[in-house]
Image (tube, rainbow, N blue to C red; front, side):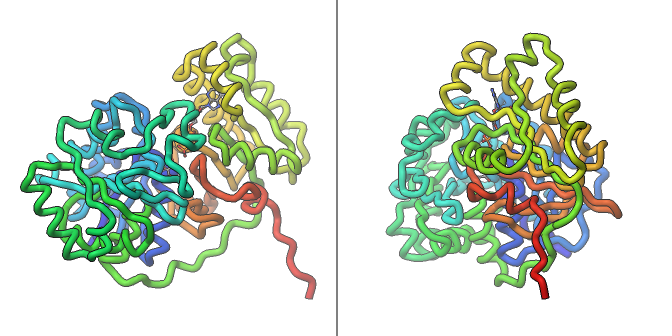
Length: 422
Ligand SMILES: Nc1ncnc2c1ncn2[C@@H]1O[C@H](COP(=O)(O)OP(=O)(O)OP(=O)(O)O)[C@@H](O)[C@H]1O
Ligand SMILES: O=C(O)[C@@H](O)C(=O)CO
């Protein structure tokens, strides 16, 4: 089977989000974690392959190297169209990594111009007049202002991208998109001739994204969040039925959360009111306390059917205080290392369903668990699918983006479902 689309995703939850969107569009999708080994054969029977990397916050040179290596593997596996998936809230700093990777992949494919469209209407993200809106509010006026690693303090995508690339950034405004694929294709050709390399595209609806996907035609590289990938998939092939697979209902479950996003904090509050919860503090760990040992000892006291939550998440003011005291990167690395080791220990103790909140956190956990690839299953909420490892005794993983899912998601995903009495 030809692989129609190869996606390079900058974090692990973003990768599951885009894989779920492709599955929704009827495309059988495989999800690989980390740059695939050169000898790894292309997954059988899949029309799309997503490679999940953990390059959102790393130095730009490293992000470029890993993304290029993943793109080369995908192209060697026969992929003609590449997609660079970044966050629908454009998580990045003025140093990168969205621009540098887009430039590197453009050079790799020999293409002159690409689209930049983080719209994901499914998640309430739209682009209008080049502004990124989250449920109608400019990005910089949302809690993303307080993100622990990349606070987003501007909303204009041209302004956000400009410091990340030496190339001109232009705009395809909504009226052009609404005029249809032909008008967008013409605008793309004109802007390319004018030397504009990155074209921010307005999109408010799934239909706008399908138009953009269709306009891109045979272009070898598009960039954006899950919405444009789904639009591209819809324009490539009519939607088929999504594979039918039940969510995993049984087996010991646990939640590990390192996301400090507003939605994760709500989900933690909801879950902790019903289930045992343990809070990890990086200050204690760096002061020399055996936080891992304490968490494991706490876990050992729980009844076998408990669904524990272990988390480090802190509200904005407390997070800022921790970061001032420890340094943001040191604090984050400490939390990630602790949660990753906890994941390994919990799975060692029999956990088979693991919900992980946060993209960086999911990257750390999945890498520590040495999971090479998963099959993408049903979504519990938009962009939050269950995935499972291959083999006889699969591990079920739900990698949740910080801002995704309803407040009761953790409970809904993991609590046993009462069978209706006949
Ligand atoms: N108490 C804390 N103090 C300092 N850093 C923390 C704390 N808790 C979590 N972190 C760090 O904050 C970062 C949160 O990023 P992560 O990507 O996991 O979540 P997110 O940004 O909400 O999710 P997504 O990327 O999916 O939107 C992680 O690196 C984590 O280790
Ligand atoms: O696009 C999004 O918002 C998510 O897929 C994501 O990347 C979160 O890390």
